[in-house]
Image 1 (cartoon, rainbow, N blue to C red):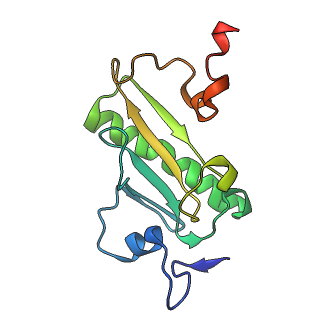
Image 2 (cartoon, rainbow, N blue to C red):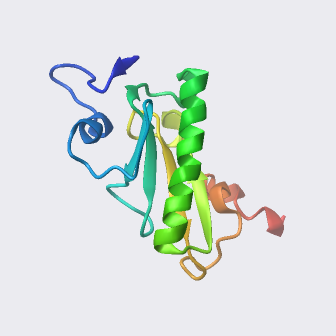
Length: 137
């Protein structure tokens, strides 16, 4: 579905709703915006979302995908100044099998700090828990 913000008259998308509300936007461009995650895994956790309602990041027009990538960098710069993290995780869940729960394309930008996890090695590899510890094989 490629519509601006509303899924339908009776059903709405939480990200579209945030784009249409007076939500605090961290970054705003013609095709994308970023705002704090409603359920952050760390202080500063933010989402970069296209303004077009499309579930699949890979179905977005190439220029929108590029703008999302640029906005991820802008959010990272903003969070580096305001939260002074030691690192970042940047993640995209594309499809239910990948763990996507809100069917509006989005990219997570998650500030990380030394000591916020017992052993952060493997980073995004933990999405498949049994295979994350590749260094032990």
